Length: 328
Image 1 (cartoon, rainbow, N blue to C red):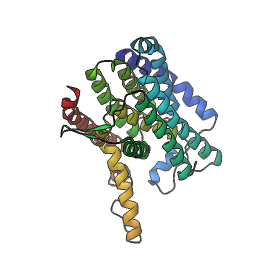
Image 2 (image 1 turned 135 degrees about the vertical axis):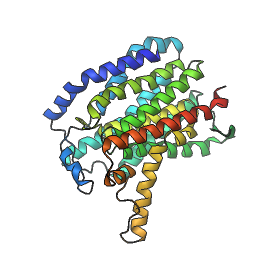
Image 3 (image 1 turned 90 degrees about the vertical axis):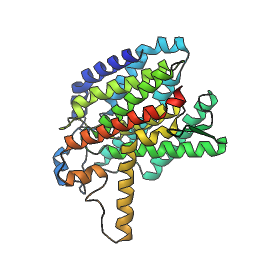
């Protein structure tokens, strides 16, 4: 099932690419580039955005084809994961559309996005718990230790992790192909994880494999030089998908090692802003988040994508062995 989902998602996304890009251009859904970003990014002005609908459509088609097998197994987690991710994607779509309509880089207010994300995260975690997929136990990778938390503690912590991760993935989407490449590696990791878990997790593996295939199809158009951007539509969807997969296998803490790039990108931004305010204008990085710092150091976008993806791949391999006692 996972292989079928992968192939279908890859083909659908690849085939839809050019028609969707032409459609977005016709609607004049161009990306507005921030003036305080790297100056050479201005040449990307008006590149079509909201391209995340490409890999969302690819994944949807893959799951639709696999639906009879999913129904037969009786494991509806792939559908729950897609709907959860789609809710975040819709939040991003509203944000993207608002930016385009206002012809600026500010869409929904930070508070509006935060409240919508908290509501989505709370609903998702509650559904998983009601269906018996969340135990309230938190497994610590590498240490083989498990802690049990009361629901009133687990729920707000889970919401914090989900909202934080979703926005970290969103922040990583700053140069051509970066968020898609890093998340493709993470999707491959979870596919291997779900397949090893077995026992009904084969259906869930269809979601992660389909996500991997759709992202590879999307990278045909999003790699440098990008012909389309995923927009918040895509990056928030991916953030929801990454969180969803971690909670679906009841391993939320695995997000720390496999999502190291997301975390470092976010921390670099927080450190930069905090230091700037405390020192009244001084900076630690040449520009934040971290991928822009390396750009300012002379790294090409392709090199940054390769290095960040390679680091993610190494962390995923290490993490895979770090959770073997849990999988046993």
